[in-house]
Image 1 (cartoon, one colour):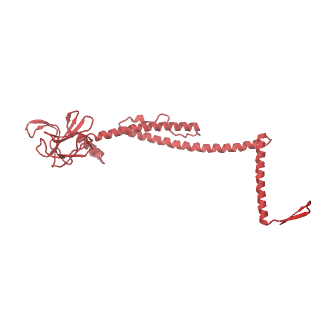
Image 2 (image 1 turned 120 degrees about the horizontal axis):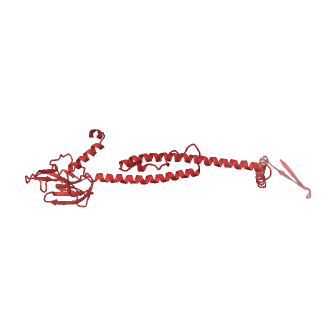
Length: 316
């Protein structure tokens, strides 16, 4: 394409040559500029018409704003509904926690009624109508308060169960010599050395020298000495004024101040002190008074039977 430009004043002309590619580029540029100009003009006219209140512009503006408001409301409503569903699931979990907490509280010896949910805090959250943001926030606050109280209560239950666990390990129910029957029971008997009636303050377990002697419960060694009558002797304090004594040992493996566990080997059977043969003399003292150790050992055997599979049937 050729374009000839003529200048009347200078009395000369100038020729320009435009290729097809150049014409296409010029056309595209012109179209873009035209579109931008049209958009700018439209927005200027529309905004000016709305501001100035020109006839016909106000209804259009209301429709535009209404569409935007409807879109925002739909978005907010969808999010509120999603939050409501989640809150409903959380409340259902709280009901499950309450049920579990009541059972665990019963095991801990606490009143299950104290664990029940506060009246009006449970139930379904979504109930046939749309909830407002204030209602959702109120429900969240209730769940937060209830969950906090449940944490506090479960902490108390945990503490009680822990105390029971500790107490159960501190009661001498473990047999101090395994696979050995009692030779001489607790009570009055004929003393094998003097031949006179005397109170036998413990249980005798006849066994071979070197047989392990086990702590009947967890505790602290308070005495480890040689006694003229008891021979090599160990005393373990289990708290609550409860002490166990292990006598006539050939070898002692603990010392005063040691912490021992239930079933821990603390000595070996012997015949030291006032003894007629190798055996363990085992005593249980409560508040300074000797008790029949067989009652404690029998309680341990009963608990072991109850815990074993099918133990309840064997127990009857």
